[in-house]
Length: 289
Ligand code: GUN
Image (tube, rainbow, N blue to C red; front, top):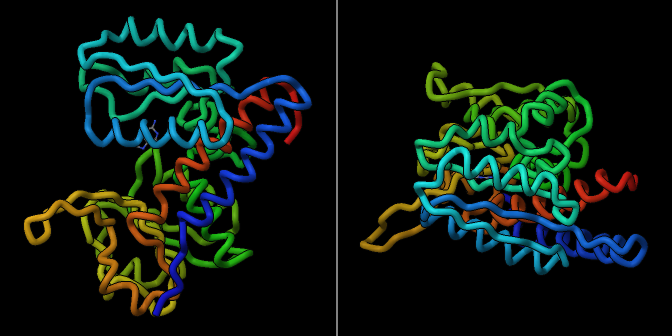
């Protein structure tokens, strides 16, 4: 039976550490970190994520401001809001919830955010810094996965890791972080040949494809660590249920350690957003970590 990597517990500890440091920033520098969360349209999943982010900000002592825009908001109107937030000295972090409605250009929106306020770590300056092994703001989900892996294993040096998925939000930055931690990294995706065989070679499997229960027991080397980034809604016995990209029930008996869904990666992502907002505030005030 695998060790359960408890994202709920680890994220609560991280959030507690962040809230202590937020309080220190207030006491020593008179500054409250401010986070602007922008939601365009009414995507139900995005609404839940944004609500959770606002809730966690309050828990960490971070001031959050929510901007809800209608689904038909123009690129110019969104650019104007981002420009205003970039110039607002009380806002240290800007998050535009993705996906955006199809008529908006996500790349342009991300590029418009001040890289110092880019708490998602999606701006090309931050993703470039990560690829080059330089410091910068790091995307929250991969950062949360790394914290869980380091708590589970300590040093990851020399381990083999397969990341399934090549998105800019998870797959690519995840691979860069694993490489920085001296893992031997493979990025697999929908066109990878013999995907199950490739995964079965890995000490660490990160599933980030968005396909419900794709990864089954025959994909996993006995004793491997499995991190499940997926959140997929499925119908089971007439009920709606959230499941990951990993078939938990079949994989859990043979894995060495595994994250559950829910209660694994999800809460870590949100705690890392608060960590990044604190880091962004410190960077803007030139206060070292
Ligand atoms: N949509 C899904 N994940 C994310 C994320 O980490 N940040 C933003 N802004 N949107 C998302």
